[in-house]
Amino acid sequence: MDLTVLKGWLFDPTVGKIITAILGILIIQVTSSFLQRSLTLRVKDTGTRYRVRKVIALISYLVMILFMALIFSDRLGRLAVAFGVAGAGIAFALQEVIVSIAAWFAISFGNFFKIGDRIQMGGIKGDVIDIAILRTTVMEIGQWVDGDLYNGRIVRIANSFLFKEPVFNYSADFPFLWDEITVPVKYGSDIRLARQIIQKVVQDIIGDYTVSAKETWKEMVNKYMIEEASVEPIVTLIARDSWLEFTARYIVDYKKRRSTKDLLFTQIMEGFQKTEGRVEITSPTVDLAKAPTFDVHLIDNQGKGQNSSFSKNSH
Image (cartoon, rainbow, N blue to C red):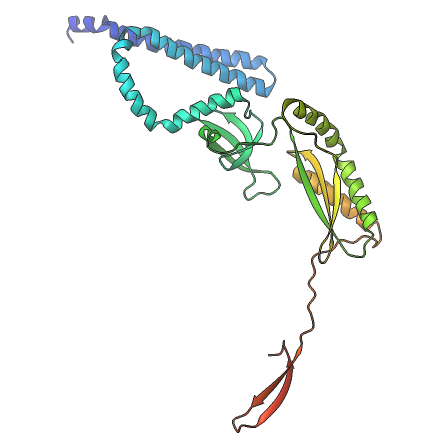
């Protein structure tokens, strides 16, 4: 290559700016990585550590953009028109991406949900394990697994669903859920004794949740336009066609619905067994009425009549 051409290329202002931009971006990236490692090592709380990393990464991106704008500031005026035309087309083509970025800002500063919350968004239910600019990552629960347990799938949901569908948060301001169990009891059982057993079991197991829920609900009343609600366990009775149905309604930690139901049913069954038959569990039964008898008059080939009686169930 001609030395003059090489010299002119090396001292070209545009080339110099490109090299400066590359070096600047590398320095910013290295500095960001160093800060993330050094600061996060001093933070013990997992949630705070995660947020510190995210904030440092976001600041580094903004610094990169500002650095590039300062370097090429003299060319931005001439490129403004071109960027304006191209930007309109890009905005239309990437509208989903733009909405997801806007939703990320809303999630970050709007208190919709945070890392560790259990949410349902875009038809997916699970615990939030990461919130990125475009997608929110959750550890999914449910589907083929009952009892709000993890099924092992990690799902990434576009942040744009924040503006398209309702977002259900199971653990935001009130980390409790109302739940209930139904206990079928046989007719003829001692219903007062059955109610006492169910009420005592529910009170023994749910008592700790009730105290915490009362305090949290007071904060809810102060924060939102919401009425006072009873968080005490309630046992009600309904008479069905073939059995008596007791329903226990109670409040429980949103992550312990399945284990709590197991404890409730186990102790209720044990309590019923100790009554020596005064309280019995039942299941739906069906009473079959006796089939009526039909009189049928048959005619043979010779035209002679013949009487025959058989029940409805005969073949």
